[in-house]
Image (cartoon, rainbow, N blue to C red; front, side):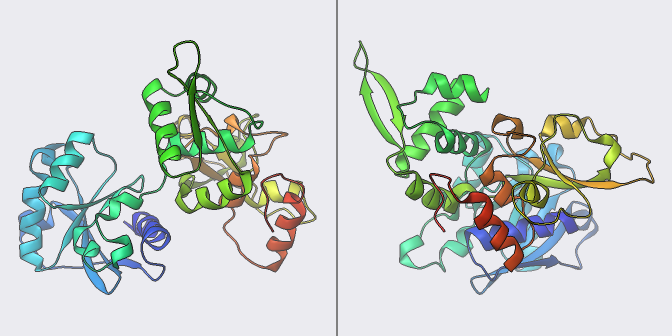
Length: 321
């Protein structure tokens, strides 16, 4: 679970505790429990909790909370389940049983940690979860769109998402104060949305945006598709004086990632592929990802990168140095 540990730690540091740490947890368990879970230990806000990934998820779904409770008793420690995804019904059932969980997409419910938070952030930690992929894409669409009212059907059409996803994303961005909603039209029920101030919109939105990257893959350069946009430092090098990285970086969608051979054999040049939570081609231009995606897929922080970013972003209407 090395990759999962790094992913969980990144999310916990971003959303809950900047000093959070996640590491492997060797534990002496009964043969049944030892064969049922992969275990990690997380330390955040002064509390240590066990993060357990079920090995046979489909078989265990009806009894997730019950088995996690048995694991917690065996370890004498709070336990949070680590799940790739869940339905609304499963999420509600776990919360009702006060069983903590973390999902791959960044949804949290950690009641044992909530008790330690200050009154300002008290309550279920899942309330501060980052944007969903549809919310991320909707946020970027408004950032780059002209200053005009935009309705749900346009979001649904341009982003290729369902009416429910578009409505949910617009409602969330409005509830957070990022968008203004007005009602009008012939029936007096047509909703439209706009951004009051794009600089404030970006500053506030990035606090909830979360990581756009689902996973990072190193692969032979021969797998790179013709339309795959450059990302990260490769994109930044295109629009600044920064030298490009030794391994070029590209952004791809989950669908494109599924088309990559599981074990491509190639002894030639290598590249880095950032698998995004939304389709990078929605906002890509001139063979590069959009500026915000570029920023959020840069893995290095130093003075040369900071200078290059100022050079690349100067002139953007939403950019604040």
